[in-house]
Image 1 (cartoon, helix red, strand yellow):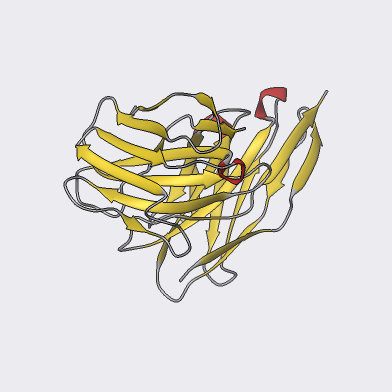
Image 2: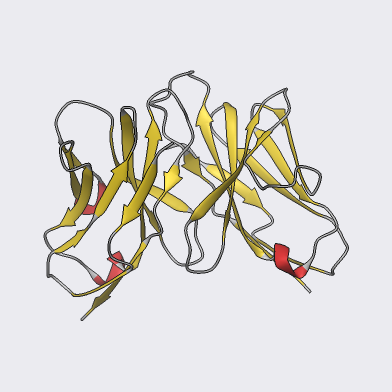
Length: 113
Length: 118
């Protein structure tokens, strides 16, 4: 079984500042990794995913994440945030032969002017 | 992009009644749909996996007689909360994957249904 730990429950950040959301996972088998964003009262939207290949993954809205196998991490970054990036961010993992997603507890990002 | 809808978006019901939530994949066929439950300020917890034409697979601790799942077609899955109680109040989210049979398929999430049981 796999598990996901999001190290920061809340991240306040000023507009146009960079942000990094940390995610660590544990699994006994190879995994796929995902970041989802949830805006208030909405469902989840996929930001990006790592399946294989390049460890640096670029997603929508200027986000990127880097897969680090030795540190079992998949941290999400954005060099300059906007007010509209205020949302809940979830890291998720699935085993390579399984559709099931295991989610982290989420990180609330609040962007202030 | 792939779109998943849920209906209703919110529902209030009295304790003891049953509520049905629909999940539809609008522009793709979904062999597999998932039902999640999300408590306020918490993560999503997988409740069950629904495969078209077969019985749903429930996660440990989820009462299958209380949360009835029917995946009648490749575009529709329903979750019925039977004899609802206030502790069933939650945000229920479904997701769907295309029928390509690959585990690399992205799950596309619906907007969720907020259930409040009085």
